[in-house]
Length: 461
Image 1 (spheres, rainbow, N blue to C red):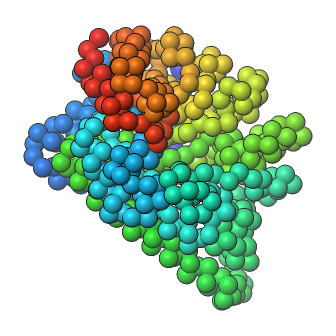
Image 2 (cartoon, rainbow, N blue to C red):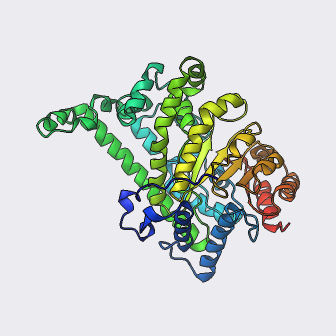
Image 3 (cartoon, helix red, strand yellow):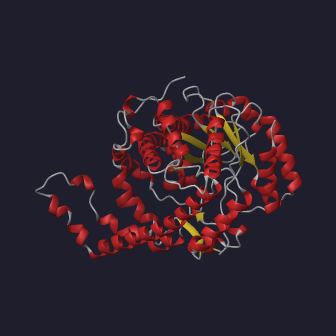
């Protein structure tokens, strides 16, 4: 196994934190142990009593044991929720994106009634998208019906001839070119010069002139308002999350989200059609741009973990699934920079959770990569053959999944119980497994979701 290379120093904004004392001298396992210890301690949570604190620590330990490829006291129950908690609480998607009090109430009810081992993500604030006049998603009242989840509006937001600009200076490119295409609220930022122009006192005042442009002033005020709207959402959801942890002992599973460098290009910048054409017309540009994005995604992950307690970082994988590209293209375009991202996060004591959406049956021999350290990641599968995943990754990496969302939406409790029992009997013995949904769940019935959780809670194989 090749050990991840440590960074030279801890993040600047965390220098005073005891967590990072002597950080540059620690190996990745020691760094992860420190982060896990902070997660277990949950110093900011005032638990209702010691039994709740114990329940919280037990749930965290279940997850840690699974990642360490040990057999936990029981299988961790980690369903991925989308808008189901809102619907269970009687809300439409639109109401959940705008009525934060109602959203918090629905999420509390979901956690109280189902008691999974981790908290559900509460979603996104609609007001922020209103204020920036977003073009790259549709959401209730803005392109979708009131009870339809938000959807990406895929487009070639980055032109094919702009790869060099992205590679040369990603921050300037995003600020001056890409963001103005994402949302009307960002359009005036195109008038700003790159901040790297501010290198000489004699010329610095002249670089400030665009900030006096009324359109820029209005844009900054609008962005500030959107920021305040997001803070309002986070305050309400933070209070709900702290309450759920304090009363029920449920930890927050992830500190944040980063993306595979190829997916940044294929999802957000070039779109599916654009990236497929680029693989034939300008493959060298894809490779260079993806490599340029690796340190930026690592840095984003490190900053998010520094502001949270969980050391787990969610990485949804989109365009690498079976059918999106050949095995040869996966090995050339997708895996090298994803592996570099994973290695960089591991080096910082972070646990990457790779959510392999769709099928990864053709990828198993690639992702069982001995340059990724033993017991350092979680592979969360959707439509992958779990027996094949166990053969490929068992004893090497924790695996998770893959109860189908469709089964929870239209199946019966009996069918769910059978599916989960057979999955656990085949995959869970020996440890290194967490029971999760194969998809982010928007639709389910209380009966099927309870059948999944209670079957997993009772299993002791």
